[in-house]
Length: 401
Image (tube, rainbow, N blue to C red):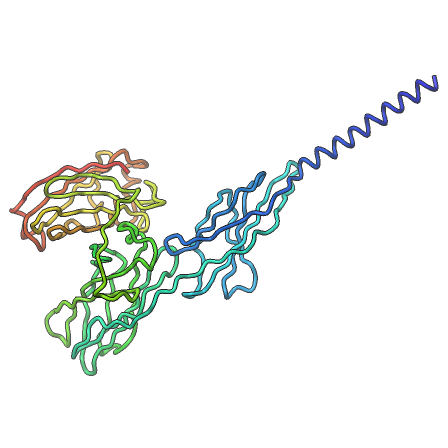
């Protein structure tokens, strides 16, 4: 009997010990051990892009940043993805922004396990050589290019210093049509006006470009902006309007060595129409979806690329934009473009209401199966009303977002 009791006690002890060990094993399995991640930081359209190595067992990653003005690490984001573009940084040109990352895992017991911190990696806000380039200098006023820089993930900012000559009152017209590296681009954020001498004789104007407008012609970083051309209309001292042509070489390139680059085909290109009179391509910017292109942020707008392959100047008129067969009367940014022989014009479009996208809700449009519009080709040049009786061709165009 005693032996039986001893044997039973031994069995119970072994069983309990096994349960304890089993629990210990289960607990050890629940507490995930994570390896230290590695990161690399590269430039993405003028902003830092963090790429994180894969950590087995990780639920996600937490990204930290420190700029030269920060006294401690700032939490940037907690994400399950292993790539992240930081558009919240603020740093002077030439300043280095430093990043690090921790991987984390949520355990079965609800607790979180963290990895060791990744080795720090830096990204330097690009420095572009600043050359004081005189744009216009006459008896009335002087305009000087002071530089261009990347301000954040969305904009390039060009600085122009103006000086109204003594006793002269100069009023300046606005402009929005620019030639970037030889390509004509309609940049809707570039309107600017300069005060007259009676209000302020000297100062600096900031001209903002959407980086996404540059992306459409294949420019992905500030050092690829080799040449900017634009005109400024001025009324010197109350006289008639005079157009002044301005040319800037932002990176300090010698004007005699400049060679115009051809636009390369981009992954977002959608060919709409190609004939003897015109080639029309739509370019949908990276990160754009159907819904976001209907707000008033030009970053999300598609670009209409119109090429004139002929040896004559033409006026191109587009109208009657419709989505899923529903016409939206305010769905264009401009109604026409003058394009010289052999040239190309890049025009960002706003499909939907120009104001707030309310037409989408009105017509209950949530997804586009197709977008259609009419394109007319007129011979001649200048405002389209002068060419209305010179119709060369008319095309119905359709494309899918």
